Amino acid sequence: MNDTELRELLVGVTTIAVVGASTNAAKASNQVPRFLIDAGYTVIPVHPNADEILGQTAYRTLAEIPAPVDIVDVFRPAAEAPELARQAIAIGAGTLWLQLGVTSPEAKQLAEEAGLTYLENICIGETTRQLGAHPRT
Image (cartoon, rainbow, N blue to C red; front, side, top):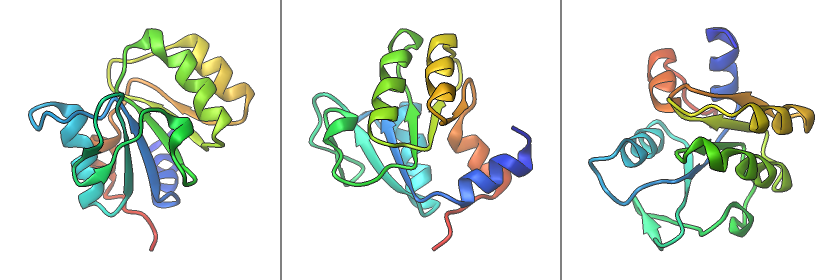
């Protein structure tokens, strides 16, 4: 995707599930969701052991999230990406976004065959900041 397409994507969504969101404020997986919240997005943390992250209710899995999700943002190892792609498809997410350093040909194939927008090896927080993207309200 070029910058115009990325900006359109980011402006056109409101809800981002962050798989692997961290309770540790020193980690990027906590800082990026915090930035996204500050930018105006609804962020839903997904963490197997936390009840709340950044003041938001955390869910154990994507399937437990009781609201529609526009983007599934992944802060997990590449080996987990195909299963997370399947889960993103199952909940009807529009985009699967793998964070910087994470790539998966299998997740890409699964997501694209299901009609999801697929991004990998790119930071959603830095991209949002660089493009000045904020959700439409």
